[in-house]
Length: 148
Image (cartoon, rainbow, N blue to C red):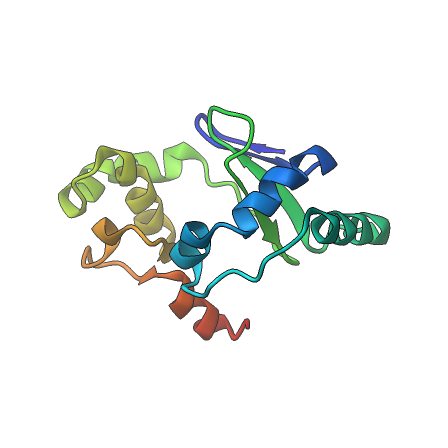
């Protein structure tokens, strides 16, 4: 489990599947993420994929449920990825610089973290574009890493 003061990433459970199926079939969610119409998924298909992945075991393709103050708001999958935890002390001194770049107080820690690490930001939030940092939307990121 990965936990921060606002967001928790936890292992996806079978009980999450009806909601995950609903997200996978939601036109607005799909268009916000990739811009393609969703490919309808039945609950049986989502359950079969979950069961097949669970049977494989291992850590590749770890599926996470995303929680923000309520049971489940979405899901994500990390493929063969190392998650690096950056201590707050690394980026907190850069909050003033982040504030000069972006107006939304909720976005400042993200900008400060990008400044501290030299990393780009993956977002669809237009507030991040034009702040002098690499910002990637989903379509560009997918093309860049050649995932289709």
